[in-house]
Length: 334
Image (tube, rainbow, N blue to C red):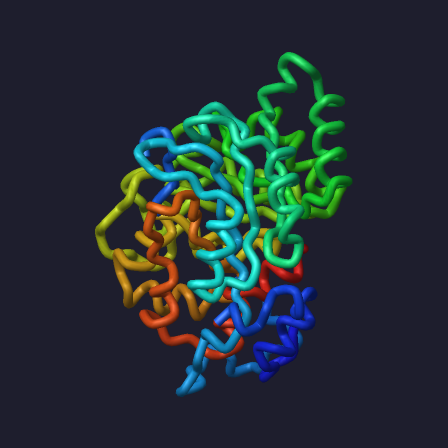
C-alpha cells in the first residue's frame, strides 16, 4: 500500500512507469453483452471512515480495473482500439487500465482472444495491463491439461490475472473449479461476470459463497448484474437492474465483510445502478467496504458512455477510502 498523504506524482512513481505514463497528460453498460468486512490496512488510521473535509480524489492515481479493446463494431457501437483507449484514458485521468479478453461465445458479438489483447497492450506496457481469459467448457473436449497450458502460456507472456471470466456455466460447476484452482496456484486475481447466463447462481449467492469457502487462496473480483442485484436484504431477483431502495443486510455486503478474498468491481451498468438506486445506502456501503471495492468502467467502445467518473463528485469519502477504491486495492494484487 502507498502511504497516507502521498502525492499523485509520488504514487505514480511507486506504481511504476511514472515517467512513461506522462504526468502532464494524465490529468456502460456492458454487463450483458448479448442482451444487453473489510480488513483495515496497516497504513489506514482508525478513523478512516470519517470525511477529510476537502478531499480531492483527482489528486490520487486512478486504475480502471475493467476495460476491453475491441477491433470491430458490434451492437451498433464503434470499436475501441488501443490508441483510442489511451486518448480516452488521458481525457479522463486514468493512469492505468486492465484490459480483459472476451473468449466465451456468450461474452460478446465475436471472440476477443487473450493472445490478441497481449499483443495490443505491448505498445503501452506502462498504461495497459493485460488479463487472460479462457472458456472452461473446453475441458469437456480437450481436457484439463490443455486449459492449464493455455493459462500458463498467457501468464508467462505477461498477463497479470484471469478475466473477464464470462462462461455459460453455474458458478460452482466442476469446470469453474478448475479455473479457481489455477488462479490460486499462480497467485493471480480472477475477475468474473455473473448474470442469468454466465457464472450463474440463485438469489442469495449460496453457490458462490461455497466457492469462497472452498478456495480461500483464490482472489475473486465480482462483477455483473447477478452480483450487484444481490445488494439488498431478501433480494427479489437474481440479475437485472433493481430500482427499489436497499435494505441493509444483503448478500453482497455480508460476503464482502466476511471474506477477505473477495472484491467488488464497480464497473458497468450494474455497478452504477448499485450505487444510484439508493444513494444514501451507497454512501454507507462505499465507506464501509472501500477496501474491498475497485473502480472500473467496462469501457469497450468509443461510443459507449460510462457513468463511473461521477462517483468522485457524488459521494463523500476520506482520502484513504478514495485511494483504496481508485488504485490501492487492485495494485496490491498485481
